[in-house]
Image (cartoon, rainbow, N blue to C red; front, top):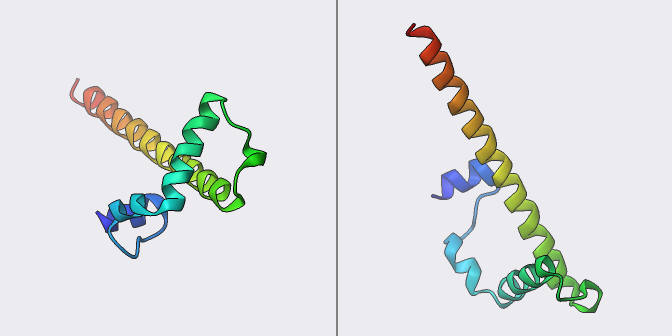
Length: 87
């Protein structure tokens, strides 16, 4: 799992990735992120470290979604080539 995270996120976790969720700053960032996406919180009223953590989480999620999309597109391209080659 750590190797896959290193490849997909360009960073290797120092500890178990799931332990990160026990960190109070990460918990606050996840909560803040959900509230910002819902439009129910003013980011300017939040602790800077929590806002920075939430921004980093969003950035990593966007990167991973892009990695997934590229992998899906490549799999579809290879499947299409395979179908066309078997005709």
